[in-house]
Image (cartoon, rainbow over all chains, first blue to last red; front, side, top):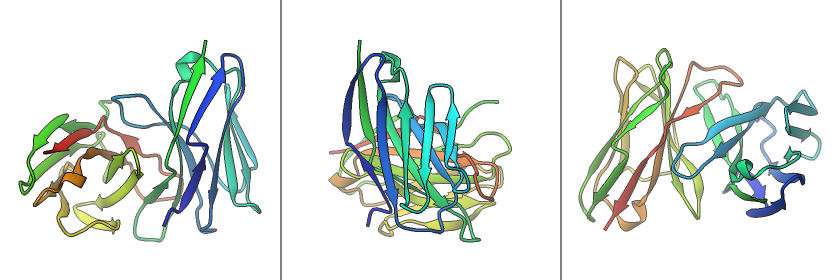
Length: 114
Length: 114
């Protein structure tokens, strides 16, 4: 059972365009939603994260939009660059009182064409 | 601070063998989580350790086990390897429990089972 559903599986964007990746979740107990970026041969690295009490968070060219009522959140990459070509994972976590457990989406492979 | 380190980086084993992977978290981090990453399934949570105790466990068979030492270093063991165990095994560490704890990933150990 996939706790976090991510789409699209792959994305091709022209340089300078906007990349949009979407995620949806079911568990309303989730209280932290990070996005990770992974380059080939590397482990995932935290890109940006949001809490459910905020509808939008922006860091440079990266923005998370969060819709609590729809249980959806998305990553927007403005002015996409070839260096942004990587796999992106959304995630969600809940603290049940006995530890962290992160649930990841299946990933989106982004290719930015020069 | 040094990042999360994992050894070995690559490993080739045959079916039926067992394997032990090692993870050294960021200095001061007490929580260590393990994930299996495959192209089809994405990142799947294996287990989390905190202060030498397993706090959470994902939906994997008992062939997958782990432990954490007093210095927070962690090992995971897979016994009776199967072809389907071929994957990238990622370790992630975080400071402590609490909402919004960022997980920092190591580069992973790529395991190939022949």
